[in-house]
Amino acid sequence: MKTISENRCYGGTQGVYSHASETCSCDMTFAVFLPEEAAFGPVPVLWFLSGLTCTHENAMTKAGAQAWAAEQGIAIIFPDTSPRGEDVADDEAYDLGKGAGFYIDATEEPWSKHYKMWSYIADELPALVGENFPLDMERQSICGHSMGGHGALTFAMALPGRFRSVSAFAPICNPLKSDWGRKQFTAYWGADESKWGPHDASVLMQGGGFDGPILIDTGTDDQFGDLLGTEALAQAMAAKRQEGTIRLQKGYDHSYFFISTFMEDHVNFHAEALYA
Amino acid sequence: MKTISENRCYGGTQGVYSHASETCSCDMTFAVFLPEEAAFGPVPVLWFLSGLTCTHENAMTKAGAQAWAAEQGIAIIFPDTSPRGEDVADDEAYDLGKGAGFYIDATEEPWSKHYKMWSYIADELPALVGENFPLDMERQSICGHSMGGHGALTFAMALPGRFRSVSAFAPICNPLKSDWGRKQFTAYWGADESKWGPHDASVLMQGGGFDGPILIDTGTDDQFGDLLGTEALAQAMAAKRQEGTIRLQKGYDHSYFFISTFMEDHVNFHAEALYA
Image (cartoon, rainbow over the protein chains, first blue to last red):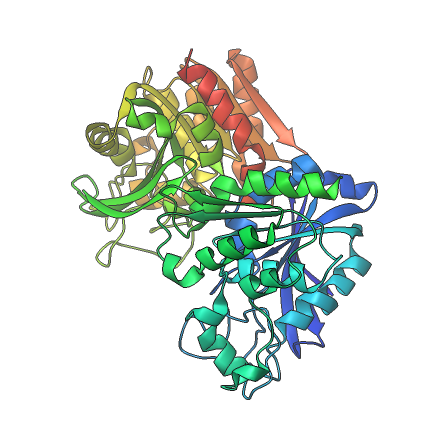
C-alpha cells in the first residue's frame, strides 16, 4: 500500500492511498478519513460508495462528511468506482466502463479481466483497510450516492450481518428496469438475463430485505429521477415492513449540494446504529 | 446577468452566475449562496475570496461553508480570482496572470486592461449583487484563503466601515516581503516600488488597522508557511492592540481540508458581528 497524501482534517487525518489490487488486476486508489479517536484505538467504519463518473475524490472533497464523522468518532472509506489504468477496457459513454463499475463482477469480454467491483468492495478492500488502519471491522455501516446507493443497498442486503445500517442519496433502486442498470448488466454479464445476478435493491428487498435500519434521501427535482426507480423500492420496503425511512426532499436535485445538505443526518443515523 | 446553474442546498440555493464586467473588460463568473431566510427579506452577506489557481468554484464545492451559513441565515458571495477569457493576458506560472489577480488594479502592460480585481470586488460586484439578490448590504463581512486572505484583510482595512468583521485562512500577510507579492506587484504595477499601493495587511495594520474583530487561522504544517509572513501581521496586530485572534493550528496544512475544518468557527465569528 502506498500513501498518496495525508492532510490533517477536523482533528483527524484525510488520507489517500493506492495498492495493487489482485481482484481488479490493476492499481486502485481509495481514501480513508480517520477521526482523532483512531489514535487511541479502533473506530467504527462507514463506507461511502460514489456514483457514475466519480473517483474516491468527489465525496472526499465535496460531501462534507468528515465534519460529522469527526464529531461521531467514525472512520470513512471512500473507494473508487471502477478499475483504472491504460489497459482497462473503457467506453465513450459516461455510464459504461471507467467510473461506472456498477459494483458487480463482470463475466463478459472485454470487461471481465478488471471489472470486479463487487468482490473488490466485499472482500479485498475490507481486508486491506482492516489490516492497515485502526478500524473496528465488527462495526461497519454503508452509504452511497446514485450508482453507489445501488451498491450500498445491494451490499447491505447480500451480505447479511456485515453492515449495521445502510443509507443512500438518490440511489438507483431498480436497475433491472432502468437504463442505469440494463445497459451495464448487458455489457458486463451478457444478454442472457437468466445469468444476471440479484443485484437489484428492489428485488433483494422482496427477498430477505435488510436486518437493520435504512435511510434514503432523494430529491423531488432529481434530474435523473426517472432512472432511479425509487417507487419500486418504496413499494417493496412498505410491503416487506422493512425498518427504514424514505425521504423525498422538496426541490433538491442529484448534485453534491443535495448530498452535503443531508450528510449530517446520514452520519448521525449510522452513528446510532454503530454505537448501539 | 446570466444564470449558469442553481441547486437547492441546505434549504437555500447555491447559484452560479456570469456577467459582462465593465471593470475587468471580460465576462466574469461568481457564485452566490442564499439561505432559506432570503425568501423572506434581505440577509447579511459574507464574502469569500479564494486563493491562487482558484475560481469561484473551489470554495463553493469544498469549503463546506453553506452548512454554517444556512444555520446562521447568511448569504455567501464567491467571486473569481482574476479576469478570464482568451484575450486576457496570462503567464505560464501558477502564481501570475489568470487565477492570480491578487486583488489589485494593474497599471502595467499587458495586465492593465483586464486585471482590476480591486475595483471589481470593491465596487462593481457589490453593486451587481446588491441589485440582483436579497442582500442586506449594510451588513457585510469578508473572509478569504491565502491570496484571498490577503484580499480580505486589505479590503477590510482599506474600506473602513464596509465590513463588520474579517477572517482569513492561511492569509498572505506581508506580500511586500514575499515572493507571493513582490513578483505580482512588480508585474502588475511595475518595478518602481514607490508606485506600489498599500496592499499589504501588515503595513495597513501599522496604519489604521481594522475597526472590528479579526480571526486568522494558519496551520503549523502549512507547506507555504514561509511565503505567508504570518509573523509580521501577528507582530503588527499585537503592537496595534488590534481586536483579533490569530490561531496557529497544529498539524494543519494549506488545503481545503484545513479550511473546512475551521469554517464553522469562521462563519459563526462573522455571524456574531453581522447580527450584533
